[in-house]
Amino acid sequence: MWVKYLDATAGFEEIKYTLDKKSNLITSNGHNTRGKTSFIRFLIWGLGFDVSLTDAFEEDNTNVELGICDNNKLLYKINRLGNVIYITEFGNIETITKYNLPDQELDVLQQLTKSTNKILLEQLIGAFYFDQDIGLRVWNRGKVVQKLKGKEKNYSLQIDNILCALQGLDYKKIIHKKEQFENKKKSVQKLKEAIIIFNNDYEVDHVDEEIDSLNNKLTMINFEIKKTKEKIDLYASGLKKQEKFFELIDELNMAVHDNDGNIVLVDRENLIYDKEKNNKLKDIETFYQNHLKNLYNQKKEINAKKDIHDNNLTKIENPELLYENLKNEINYSGIKIKTLDIIYEEFSKEIDKLKDELSFIVTQGKYNDLWNKATKYGNILNVENYFSYEKNKIRTKNLKYTGTKRNLLVFSYRLAIYAAIMEELNIYLPIVLDSPASQEMDIDNLNLMLNLIKNELPSIQLIVATNQKNNFKWGKQINITNGMFGNLDTNLLN
Image (tube, rainbow, N blue to C red; front, side):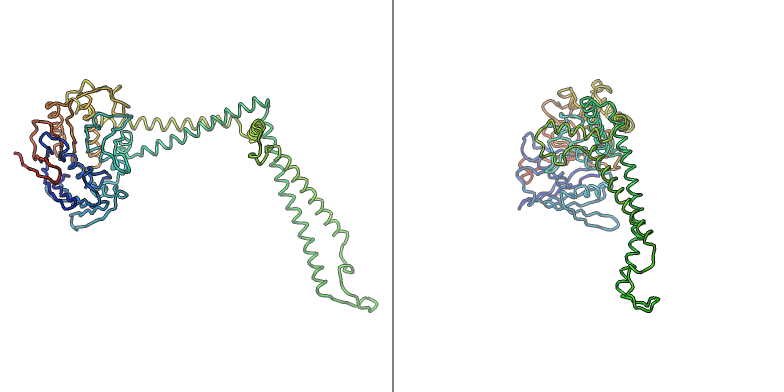
């Protein structure tokens, strides 16, 4: 994939640049602040990234059109105006898709690359954009920090994240899970220490046994309460039915003739039924009601022992009393040291598993492929003696070397990361080098870097912005002497 042209409009100014498929030099003939960086920013901004243009341009009044090719076939036309981008895709059916930035930046990259690997796509700009002013010198805690930053995000390379993504894993999720277990483990340890302190301070030798005994009693009482309620409901049901029968008799207001021929009103007093049995039922119900009340009192006493601290702790002004209440609450909670030890050990095992998983991911498998690429490139750049597998790993927190050797060493690492990501995505974006030749980089070393890309990655497009003299044979040189929209002299070099 390569950029065929870049059309830029800012206000009433308009300019078009055409690029070579293989190699392009953006230069201002030895003069800085003339537009090289503006060209690079227009290119990256036009691809949909959330970066700022240089100070001279307002994004809402700027339009960039890019033509993206595969071999010699135009694949996409990208138009960006402010925070809206349109992608015209040329295939069997021509389609135009609109995206709103920066929210849909990832969607833009997914369409252009045909990849769903979101983690690698988030690292994409850090892979193909090289800013030597910072990006080839600052290697800090497994990240490459660059001067190019988005308004809402930092486009730094995150090495461990990349190594996981190359193997289809989410580094952030693994780390988050590991941190969760570590926090839980710390909480268990602190609780254990607190209980030990409370137990020793309280001089209770058998707290666990007492708590178990109270819990057992409470369980038995709850069971007895349930059974007593069932018996009360049984006896009360019979008495209620009988009472409803008497109420019905009263409502009917019935009268009958007795044996003497007298008219007698029917009520509960002259109905024939077993009054003694009825009274016994009432006595039994009353017994169980009293028994239930007694059970609730016992339950209340046990709960009082388990929860002896004041319900309104905010009103307690005495810190020592608060301490005693908290101590008793923990003592009566039923938590056992043995239980905490088991939980602590299980959390430790889970953490060790995650550590082993991460260790394998970031030291084996894809890591070895990446390391082999880096050392191969380092040999070509004549820094092979600066590679140490033990001291100088790709995940190192800091590269101690300085000067040209450091720049070449980091460039070897970064180019290896670029190659690994592009292989995984099965697409090769242009490599953009912004000022790759610092004062420490001479012509010979710059030529080594450029020829390394040409020979090892022959199918990619190279775009370099620099004023440094070099002997590289460029496909095209773009001279920007008076800014992006000033006078320019574009020459095709053979």
